[in-house]
Image 1 (cartoon, rainbow, N blue to C red):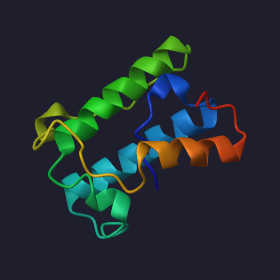
Image 2: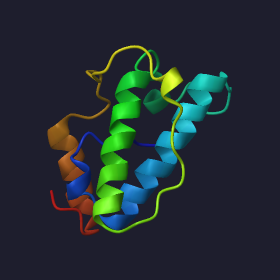
Image 3: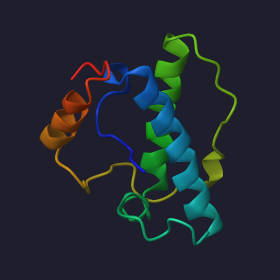
Length: 109
């Protein structure tokens, strides 16, 4: 599971769509108090920051639309509570860029 802290326009197709899918999984775990992956570091860092996760989703959707991808999975804004800013990082921005570069996937980092 990974929510990148990289601008969506820099992500390749696979990472953009993969992050979108994983964001929905984290959202579902947190709003429904599901147990699966609830202790994963990526899930934990978004706890009490659903407003920030909601905003990240908006950024991903905007980029998906820029690329003419269809989007049919909105989030309920009523659950977008807590901090609007994510300030906890599993990997630094620099390390995330290094990870993406090493994948040689087409991400523009």
